[in-house]
Length: 339
Image 1 (cartoon, rainbow, N blue to C red):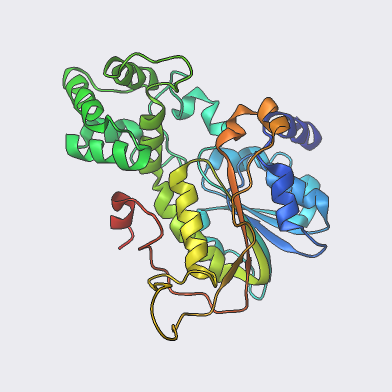
Image 2: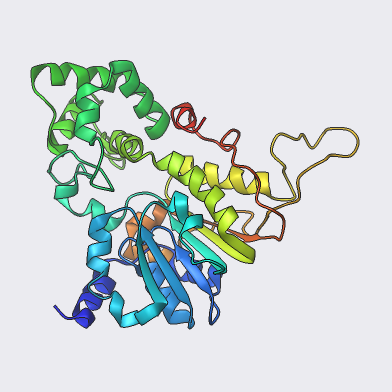
């Protein structure tokens, strides 16, 4: 396959959500350097590169994503640089003296990962229960087969907001006592059997549990918190941060982080306090008081966009603040890993 053919396949098969809105929010200019911290299939990066004569550093922890992008990345020459790594370290990947004008983050699992049964992310496709973005470390199968029942219940409740977390954790532990849970179909069947019958219009009973396990396996919320702080350190004054989230846990973290860094809500300071308040200077100016959501036309083409939320902020010239994970909406499990 030629680079042109590989690019055509990538462009056809993977269209990121809120693409036009993200490009408009970043408003790339010639000679800008932009970090796409969750490169995936490269949809945002290609759109940004097409909007101006800018440079993009594409970062991804998934080796499959980078291997596929390598098939067509040469078409952009030195305007596109691919980096293997986590976006929580994005402040370390720029060249010495290189100005970072924007950071784009698309949080969560990509359609490329969901659509492949071998990755084990989706209950809709039977495959090995894996869920590892980096193809390294403990898998979801190891987690469900070894974690204590109380730990499983906490994961399902805190990361999936699953109200029946205890009953489902009990069902998982009971099932694994008979045979190891090794596939997505096995786990999905266990959860479905332990859940009330699905009503019309309701999501699949395993939806929240699979989300929770995926977040736990990849430390996604801790990664998000560290990534926001890394973006604060990396961005030059005037640089823009655009973050797309897909559920309330993520959106709450982004919202609270930006508020804690903006002029309208310093962390740990009550607006009702009498007298002058010694707040740190705002390091971000929030540009979206309410998150941007997909319009009807996009929703008709891509139902996955229905839960997408975009928040945008502009970096000021104030120094970056020390990273403190408290008070930005992290669940207790994620907070434990950061303190």
